[in-house]
Image (cartoon, rainbow, N blue to C red; front, side, top):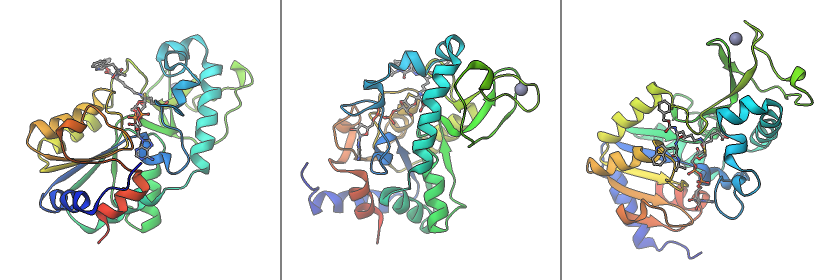
Length: 255
Ligand code: BJW
Ligand code: ZN
């Protein structure tokens, strides 16, 4: 991969600096530099596991033990990972200037941990696909933080709801499920009012999340993309930096 030339960085910085409001949309690629696997592509999670076997409500109904086993492993890798230079630069930038809305498809919590690390924990990210570190009940409306290891040895040892003893599931959005309406509504609203949109590390193939960036572009936002590979959004970008997030994002956002 070639290093982005400074004229591209300069153009991207100008697009972001001149916009009063910027919508940032991130995906699994931003956390790849923290050692977490992306979903698609050569090293992606879906190369080893079929999504319909693990990331659907039908899969969980069929074999909750198998699905919990996979999520237990994912949770442990996320808890061992650290926010990288891209998470930290975004958190500092959002704390330093006004008008930044950070929207993520990631369920790893690394934006929040990055904000804590740089002391800008007042900067909240809008999580479109939930969180690996929360659970919700399959029987009642309970949902809460849950980081303890899950014993997926048998259906009996799977985690149960503290209110109704119903089976708990990861609080993430699976295929065919609606996104949290408040998070999606807020993200779309911010997108339509943004003068620039920075998209980092997403294949932009999963909807309605990819539609957030598309909505910003349709409303006139100037699009800056950071991705190691082209995506369906690339033709709409004023600058598309073909680079790793942990390298390109700090050079875009740090003074
Ligand atoms: C780097 C890098 C580095 C690497 N630096 N870059 C319209 C058309 C067709 C289908 C649909 C449609 N609308 C809806 C659908 C169906 C479906 C969908 O979108 N399917 C498509 C795949 C075709 N959508 C849904 O089902 C959604 N729900 C829905 O629509 O509900 C409707 C409804 C309404 C009312 C009632 C009922 C239903 C839900 C989607 C949920 C997605 N969930 C997942 C799993 C979350 C839990 C978990 O983690 O296990 O979310 S799937 C997975 O994909 C995960 C991600 O958030 C999401 C996006 O992936 P992302 O982040 O883009 O990762 P990758 O791997 O795809 O890409 C990584 C990128 O990084 C690549 O481009 C690399 O090049 C790059 N990269 N290293 C920079 N170092
Ligand atoms: Zn319950």
